[in-house]
Length: 175
Image (cartoon, rainbow, N blue to C red; front, side, top):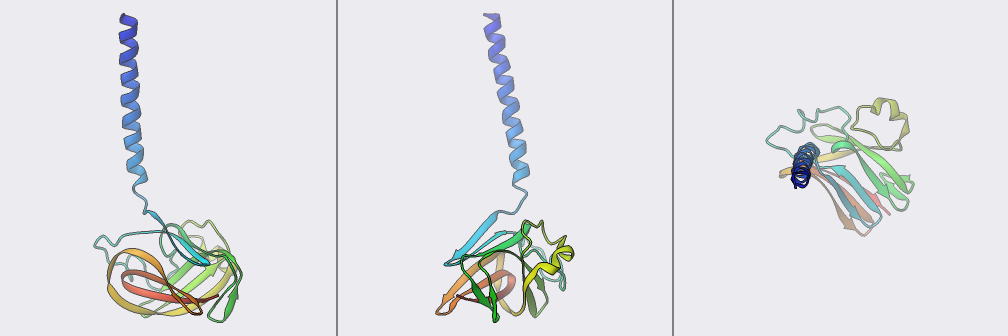
């Protein structure tokens, strides 16, 4: 009987340790911004979605004039299921890393063929793999807490919208 009681107590101890360990692990996993997907016919964007949390975003958290991963955690990726035309340039079907260089009135949107980048820290080493660099205008919008990508479809294709804080930039994509 003592052996059975000892075994039951040991099982309780093991379960308690397992419970505490899983709680500790779950706290660590929640520190990342959630991974989000925005998609429409022929285009899909995968990005980490940061929140504003009362911070000054553009010109501070995201400095003007510097390459940004355009999301949180891993660099944002955009996938085209067929060839598209952006700003007069044909972009082959495939997946690309999407970087931006925010400025107060314009942003440069960059597509790069090097995938699986963490942030934009190694951008200077992969800059030669850019397949597109196009400047777009900034539009002022109602404040938005979370970085959001969306699409607006039209007769020629779609427009990729990137919105956060009080900023929106749009990139026309033709099919």
